[in-house]
Length: 80
Image (cartoon, rainbow, N blue to C red; front, side, top):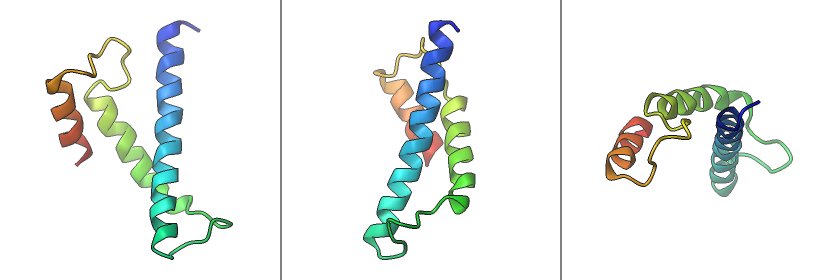
């Protein structure tokens, strides 16, 4: 596997984990769920939508300049 694909797969896995952790931490903080029984199934659609939004703004391309103002604004708009 070339370096570009391994970077892309790593970013996708980290995004999926981050969405699950952030949503479950927020739900735990509000008293909706317990740490022993985290939300999984209800988060499948938000995970897919997040991955699609980041893919559409070339967030998974290792050639994308993520420090530019253009990418930052596109990323923010896509995630909103």
